[in-house]
Amino acid sequence: MSFDVAAIRGQFPILSEIIDGQPLHYLDNGASAQTPHAVLDAVRTYETTGRANVVRGVHRLAERATEAYENARAEVAAFLGVQPKEIVFAGGCTAAINLVAYSYGSLLKAGDRILLSELEHHSNIVPWQLLRSRSGIELDVLPVTEDGRIDLSALPRLLTPRTRLVSLAHVSNVTGAALDARAVVAAAKSVGAKVMLDGAQRAPHGPVDLPSLGIDFYVFAGHKTYGPNGIGVLWARPELLEAMPPFHGGGSMIGRVTFAETTWAAPPRRFEAGTPPIGPAIGLGAACKWMRGLDWVAAHAHEMSLTQRVMDGLQKIDGTWLLGPSSLQDRYPVVSFTLEGVHTHDVAQVLDSFGVAVRAGHHCAQPLMDHFDIDGTSRVSIAPYNDNSDVDALLAGIQHAARTLR
Amino acid sequence: MSDQLYQERIVALAKAKTGAGKLVDPTRSVRRDNPLCGDRVTIDVRLDGQGRIAEIAQQVRGCLLCQASASALAAIAVGRDAAGIAAVRHDAERAVGREEGEAAEPFAAFAPVRAHKSRQECVLLPLEALKDALS
Image (cartoon, rainbow over all chains, first blue to last red):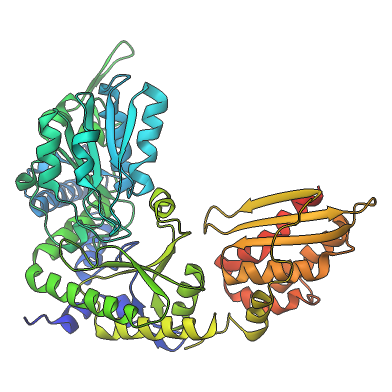
């Protein structure tokens, strides 16, 4: 399998950055990925040749801006295998989940139940807790297995006739474990529950064929998918979007406003009040197009061979403990670990001095940390532009931390 | 590799674990968390009749900087009252570059943290806990 990682790296200007005389080894892609020329150029083109507000203007720049914004929506839709009118731009992945929790949540009644899991990111926990406070819904929680997967064997026990929604991570941001979405959908449908997947950690690894999954809602973040900050995506089945009331009120999301009554625009505009993040949306469209242009069979094989290299290297260092699946089966390139006797922040700090960027801490997944009775982990998260030199620098840094800090 | 932060003196302070543990019958016991990084410090103190620290113990579930700071603090806390600990706090702030001036020992050891703004709270957390214990 040939994968020209040098050609990919050449598209990402930040990867040639030298920090304190050292090359950058960026392995914190799960927090924010880097962005290629294709995205930077698209945003620059908008800002320099088409910057204006969208939808209502009739002048030439407004026409250009609106066309670019709607083209971006079409690119995102193509990335997910769905229709553009089913794509809602939000301020981020967290904002998209909050939109669903507020808007779809307002259709739920006290006593209705939502099923989450123990490994969810806080962004897929807290919005539902806020909904619980507002409306009296109940939350149920799927446990995790010892290898860091959502334990689907508990589905029959935790799905009830009152379960209205199952909302789970498509891929864990801590363990990299991929969800068997079809099994979840089959079980959820048997009780009439909808399914939402948090795709924040899945979308950066190539197009997602949503129709084949049979789910109802999908969300992901722009900045983790090689796009700009301040943009995220909600996809929902059109009949659900049609039934949902607005989240935010303001310009652009209305049909007709009078002081007596206001009617709503059709989706997706109903959920895009005010001036949207136009440049970031255009950048995300370019990122989706860029991702669709990649050979993901080769890219994924490359990512997973680096993942194996990380796992093999870590296991050779005395006192490391890996959290997550022990094999590459049904997982994505995220590796979390602890180093006995050295705090995760100290591991990350030493790695920084080797030019290696990783994430340390609870990864906004405190219930998962509590399950494993740990304060946190150091997390390596890989993108297609990473290479063996990144992994080798990582392992050298961890060995140094193990030698000097304990 | 430019490993400037974890210099020998800081590592030595952390490894010394001065005052590590709990007191049997503390006058005050205070726990402080840093919600950003998850560091957690518990400080136990036994005070004399004049509000001075007669005995101190510290427990840290956190990074090496936090451990080193708690250890340094425990080494010099006995005999000090709230004002005396406030003076130590100024030393720590000077060491990490948040205040002007020279820091006295043992907090002078934390000078390398100046360049790492995101880690300065790790040094200050034990002082926050002790301040609460004396308030």
